[in-house]
Length: 288
Image (tube, rainbow, N blue to C red; front, side, top):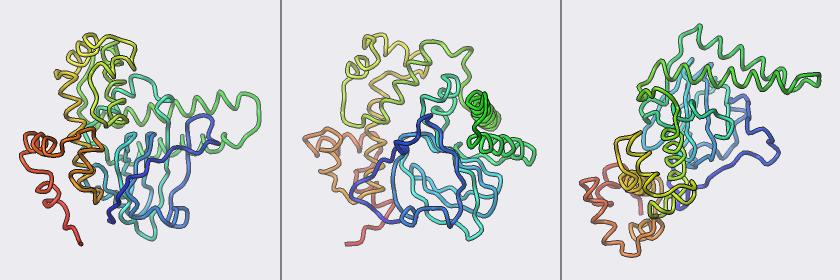
């Protein structure tokens, strides 16, 4: 894996009007420069492997994907395609989060990073594949009710994916997707895109609620305060920048909103039990 000075964030092509892109992945269809390119996407990505192997590093963890594995990449997660076999073949589905219902947003966004890859049984894989094939077929048709059919097939796919992850993983259950759950999911989504040091009131304003109400919702849903999640978000982003880029600690501190890089280093050590450079040294060997 190569190390970058900047991490690029990709969006779907402007020609995509419905927020959904479905395509096939194979060595001959992958962009030449994608291998080893560390980047983010501002949408959800699902990869269903049908043949061969595919190695990807996502959020400091390396995953070895193989046939019948279903892999999720959440919006703004840093990832790098490291290697794939010559016979690799998969279906790739990218979805803007506005197309995903609130109940599934709660499930998918709260999946632990260690549970973003699940192996599918043959029947489950085939059911999902059959529905994908139907959607692909109708996307090119020009007949009455095509839009309604494709929307229905998309809903079937995303809910099937949701049920597969729910069956295989351990996301805390909620009795209903109430206002607190929705607000908390929106807040956690915002802090993945706003990695600069911010006050709780900043996010409350974006959600058109008071800081106290935001804190109540987040505490009720997660058991932790807004301040806890903001600190965690900053530390997690610092870890990413230390691991995936060659930026100095001073540059990283400034990028995250800390003018005093020594204070940032003390804060990092308090939470991680290592200095920033010790953390970096445990993961990579820098070549000068």
